[in-house]
Length: 143
Image 1 (cartoon, rainbow, N blue to C red):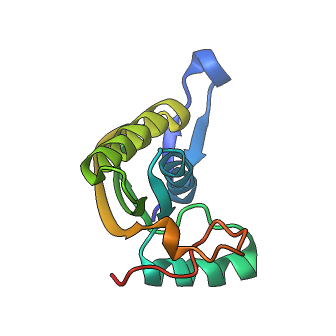
Image 2 (tube, one colour):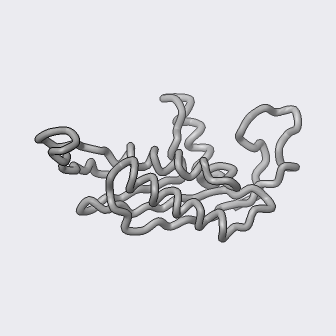
């Protein structure tokens, strides 16, 4: 991911430029996607395992399963999600796409070229260990 410079409008911050890294855009995408009803978590099984390792080393990873490419001030996003059963997969994916586009345009101030959503799994409440207070499932259906 390359860092992108976005010219700062004079009316908001004065002369100069604002640099927003692709990692920041990915974090905004991850937060927006997690807020959509029906999204259980981001990423597939392997991505979540790698994310857990990253979290242990450097803190919370808010963008597992998120890939952002910015070219000419427009973002292309690819995201993998796990949907809670019995939510409608197409509706959740569409809601995620809309939430991401809205977040990038309003929070980051970039145009969105495209948002590709991949549903990696479906999570059932029965998959959770009833004694666990964790947001992360102990058991996930195979990819």
